[in-house]
Image (tube, rainbow, N blue to C red; front, side):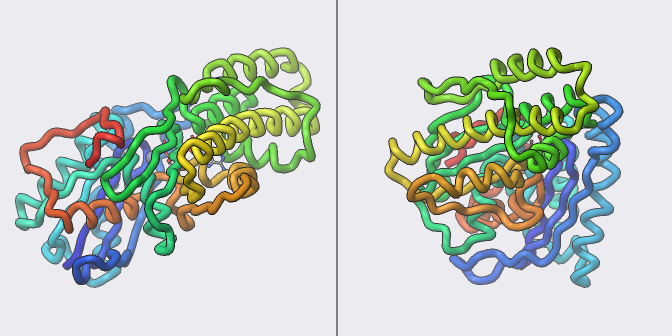
Length: 338
Ligand code: KG4
Ligand code: ZN
């Protein structure tokens, strides 16, 4: 059996193809493609939902054709379609879900709706078959920052969630203040990694509560950069600013993970989402006492369809198909997925 997975919740269009073998064995990833819309949105400093949706409409058939033809297959060979149903931008989700529904209506394939965050959360399971439940999942992306206790597949308990900005947003907004085009998170990290340290130290926020909050830090960063606005061409100063920003964001994430490990007694930590690509975060998390760290494989930190297909295959195995009349869910907390 073949499963085709579709992701279109934000500004990446992605398709992946899996082979489903016998019950209980992991789905086999055969092919995957991602088309990033980053350049399209750069001129606007952020994702423009309408433009993103139109771009998905153009890319979905092309990417689908690419993953299938590479394996000598066509849409008629797909038995299951797994598609991101939420959370995300409504118009973008609608593109992927309507595309998948169209295929299912035409071919009779079954449809499975997948939660995007559950995809991120379980991406480390897909790439590290030795990872066992229970584990703590740290999802850090441009839209989400949460720590989830993963007791088993579909058994999720929220430990902490951001009250305002996500960690990726904190990186991107800071990068913007330093003059990097959207999304500047990776560029800021690269500049920070060149610096040996920093003369600056930004505040550590929300230490006494369970949740995350990056808005106070964002203000402190804006004030600091404003203070040094006339010196931003100095590479040493820029490096030190970037270092201080990255250090403050990463330290906040590590502090909460350490707290969660202490409270739950669980030492397996799986990190996912775009910010999981950050080398400094990986290094600092790996230094936590007693931690066993699991990361997604290459290409599976940022938005991708493989993580959607992986969860879709597990949901399909449990008989959880989506009605062809069902709507998208632009808001859909991961702990509501059971
Ligand atoms: O998971 P993702 O592709 O999209 C969402 O679901 O939001 O994550 C994108 C986010 C962006 O904010 C981007 O700047 C950030 O991940 N990101 C990074 C790095 N690579 C990507 N942030 C910090 N360091 C990186 N190396
Ligand atoms: Zn994502």
